[in-house]
Image (cartoon, rainbow, N blue to C red):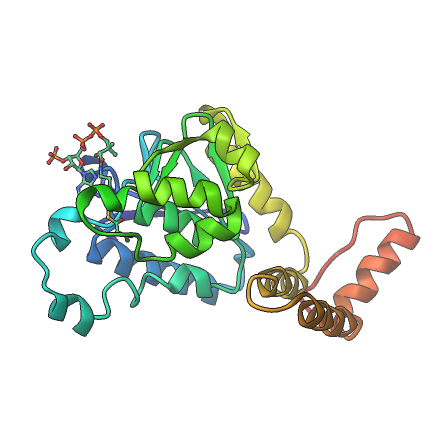
Amino acid sequence: MAYETILVETHGKVGVIILNRPKALNALSKTLMRELAQALDAFEANEEIGAIVLTGSEKAFAAGADIKEMATKSYMDVYREDFITVDWERVSTCRKPVIAAVSGYALGGGCELAMMCDFILAGENAKFGQPEITIGTMPGAGGTQRLTRFVGKSKAMEMCLTGRMMDAAEAERAGLVSRVVPVDDLKDEAIKTATKIADLSLPLVMMTKESVNRAYETTLTEGVRFERRLFHATFATADQKEGMAAFVEKRQPDFKNR
Ligand code: CAA
């Protein structure tokens, strides 16, 4: 499928989506978010794909929702179209793992989009921020909620109230990103990490992702109960038998996604 605002690649079992509006620092326009949702639908439906990488350019992962597109919208416009719901939530409903590879700016909706992914690998030049307050609005795609859960109230509050950007080192210390790598290695490292996941059993990867995500939605007791039930369910899979047999027989497992 030909896209206008994103590029799509496959690297073995890994699907890569590259945000591609360089002149607007990958501002997240309606078209871009529609195309991103379509590309995710396609990778989700493709049985050959086991993990997805979402990335941007060296200068910007994404500098936020498209300000030029939304500047003149009225309350009725944003309410009626449920602005920043349709298509925007597609990343967080993806059942296959999605890794954000962030180089340069991840601001506003860009930071929120990265946080919707399962984890964030950052280039050394990455800059995260929620500057919406400085343009007369506030985060609208989960920034006040996800950032607070990831980095704690004090840092999230400061960032949302002042628009201050966090660099990659600070983001790693705060737990927003899983790892920082040299900018030139970022895409390869993300694909390598995604390949490692894609080589595992997809249903077991999906169950694990679902269980980790449950930690954000429920109490500890209920979350552990949910985990235990899924853990028991893994014993109904052929891949559990294969994985443990391979360990005992000192060989590599051959997972069949069953
Ligand atoms: N929307 C639309 N266009 C944008 C944009 C955005 N979010 N961010 C950058 N651009 C455009 C600029 O308008 C500029 O276009 P022109 O050449 O046509 O003027 C081009 O991208 C390059 O940008 P700059 O010249 O500003 O580049 P810079 O290197 O000087 O600055 C920057 C980079 C600090 C990221 C700056 O562009 C900036 O502050 N961008 C806006 C960041 C922002 O406020 N994001 C939040 C948006 S609101 C939101 O996201 C709501 C939500 O919660 C979903």
